[in-house]
Amino acid sequence: MIKRMENHKNESGRSMIEMIGVLALMGLITAVAFTLIQSTLTSQKVSRTADDINTLAANVRAIFAGSSDFSKLPSRTTNPSNDAKKIAGAILNPNTTTNNATAPIGGTYSVSKDSDTSKFWVEISGMNFDDCHMMAARSYAESDLGEDNDGVICGNNGNKLSIRYKK
Image (cartoon, one colour):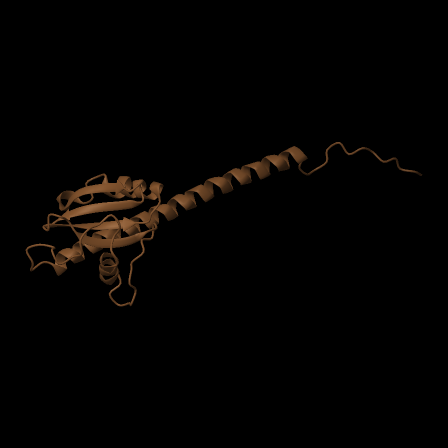
């Protein structure tokens, strides 16, 4: 007796269209996750840089607490001097021989006196345009510094963030 092969109309499994749909959904989820991770990493760098700036300002005030002004700091110029960078490096990295302190967001910190010696500047030079404006907007546009700061500038084509502090 010969059995005839019947067509199996109710086969199990997935169609090619269903598999493509699943792959597209997985790709979308991966893209969203990657974007969120990048955003979180950037926020972390901005927060660490803002913490460094606040530490620099607090430590400069502490070092000059017995002084009437900040006249012993190096002068502020268009390009921060090596002395201004070394002071920032020594304040942020006291237990190392690092000459300069590099910001997590990019660029190099410096500390210098203002023409009004009752004020001083904390600056990050060498950062890119977008990072400078992001730091200024996220960290200092609102009253994060309260009455302690006297001005925030993104200058020199946006590659230097300058924050002036009062005594």
